Image (cartoon, rainbow, N blue to C red):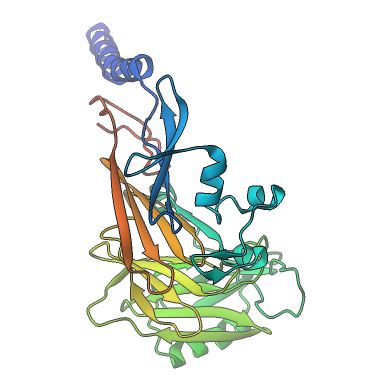
Length: 343
C-alpha cells in the first residue's frame, strides 16, 4: 500500500510539473501581441493597420508605410468612425462619388463574429421558434421549444413539459411536403428578442439539403434552398442584419465560405480562400461598399477585403502570429469549452 502511495505521489508530481512549468514559462515570458487591428478603406483602396509600437504608442499606417493621425484615420474609415465624424460635423456628403447619409450607413453597417469555442461547445438541442410576423415592433419569446428527431419536429410546452401534438404535426407535414428528410444534421438560428426581426432557422436535413424554417402568424414557413452543384454544406450561420440583404453564411466540407442572400436565396461563394469554424475565429465588419473579413488561424491573422455586391476578393494582407506555444499539458483550449487533459 505504501509503495502504491509513493507511485501515485510521483505520478501526481510529474503531471503537475508537466502542467505548471510550461504555464509558468508562458506567463512570465509572455509578450503582448503586436499583430495590428486592420480595416480595409475604400477611400485609400488599401488596408489601414492600427497597433502599438515600442516607444511610439498607437500608430496608424497603410500597407505602403504611410502614417496617419487619428483625425485622418476618422476620414479614411468614414463608416467605422461615423459617430465621431458626425460629432465633429465632418461626415462627407459622398464617398467615392456615391451620395451617402448617416441613416444609410447605420442601415448597411454590420459586424459578425464566430469563435471555435462556440462551434465546438456541446448544445442542448431544444430551440425556441419566435413568431416572425406578430404585428408588434418588439419580439417575444414563445412558450414552447422544439427539437428535431428522426420522426419529425416536436414542440414542447415549457410550463407543462408536454408535446404539442397538433403543432408538431402541422410543422412536420409542412417540412416533409418540401422534401425535408429527418433527422437534421445541422441547425443555426439566433433565438433572442434583442434584434429587429426574426428569420427563424437554417437547417441541414439528413441528406445534406438546406432549408429555411420560421413561424409566420402561427403557421410554418418552409423553404427548400438549392445549393450549387457539388457544394456539401457543413456549418451554418444566420445573420439577421439591419439591411436584410443576407440571410446567412455557410461553409462546406472544404472550408469554402459562402453568403446566402435573402429573398432570392442565392448561395454565392466569397473570395475568402479558407475558413474552418472548428479551428479558426472569424470577424466581419461590413458596410455598403465592402467587407473587412479577418480569419484568425493558429499561424496568422488573415485579412480579406470583399466587394459588398458580389463578395469577390478586392485585396488581402496577412500578419503572422508572433511567438509559439510551449509544448505541455493543458486542461483548457480556446477551441472549445471543455476542461480535460490535452497535450
